[in-house]
Length: 335
Length: 244
Image 1 (tube, rainbow over the protein chains, first blue to last red):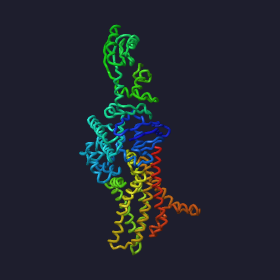
Image 2: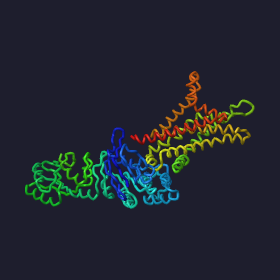
Image 3: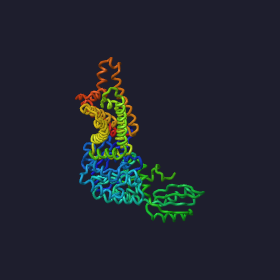
Image 4: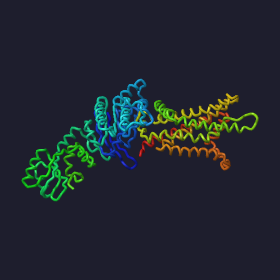
């Protein structure tokens, strides 16, 4: 549906996007993930035809976005980071205007506007001035605008920013509903959000793609690692040595002394069963166990791992997780 | 394109904007009108509307940047530019739609001044319609150039106020060019003189105001408008490509 090839964008001397390639398939929701300033918005602006790229190509529904711009843009509904609304217009008036510039046939304008308003639940607000709407409602008006003209491709740049939790889940549900008729690319810097709606994710940082994988794989990678947080009484070196000797312990990190002879640390385990063995070893060696708790490696931690190691592209997140414990740049390593 | 034109018109007419500017314009016009009547010295009350137009232009030229200042600067500042440029409208169409909407507002403002000749007729005066029509046409054409220039400035900056101020400076410069063309220094150099007077819009307007319709002037104003509009399109495209 959308094909991005070697896309590069320079702002003066700075490269915001460095030769990225990926594709959005028919009727899929692609998550586009990266920290702030990673080049997400730039990429989306280029796909939507707002900014031209420095080099590389974007093809939407078979039309090149620079050479066949008008036809390509007809296939796109775009919700930018800041909803592009006119504060002096009323909601309905604004949506009619948007339908107009998107070339919706006159007879179709009202039905489409009604439908978009219903989907975003802003029908009650149709007569309100956009200026007087809350951030969440402005966001929804911007979203409604993207749906007009029934574009095949939807580009949503952080659609849930500024919404309250109830609205966030509404919008997520909406995005899932829209999947039937649209191919969607959805950007976010919150992993939980992406994992809730997307099948596939592209992770980008500093203008480069770090990983491209399915959510299923992502979740697998997450559960593959288990963290055991401990507070122990004893000698630092002895504790670390004992733990590392246990089979199934992948890594020991975050070692900190919180009181004289009392340490907190985290051990990364292959599976939960290793925990029993650790307890036995510790007790046998007379290490005092103050506290012990299990924690899954959170999505956020996976995300941080990925984004903090730029420069290397992995075929899957699993590879990435396998190699991270040895990297000193990782914040979860021992200090 | 019509949708954008309509929206732009609404932004003028659904707000006090167009009306305040039109009333300001009418006020200036009425002051000139009253002064012209008061200035009449002979027994026959005779004055020309063309002169009123002529006097008015010095004020009017400062109203136009206010009319055009928001056209692109506000879109940029409000982030709505993204909506326009990612829509299936091409840049020339966007520029043209905005230009036509401002021209419409301008036309509306000129229409309000028609009150004065009408008033003159209704109170028993005689109006030379052919001369008046010519003056209106010249006035309108001059306005087109100023609108195009104002829009170009608005697209160059993200701040409407700055666009307006720079617009005033340019308009002032255009007036200066006219005065300069009439100076003795320029008159001393025939070549320079021919160039400067060729670009002097005021001089061309005088022909119109005297009821003389010259094809040359019509072509001059229209091509100049077209050139500035094209410049506007190019400058927008250029900014998108080098966006920083």
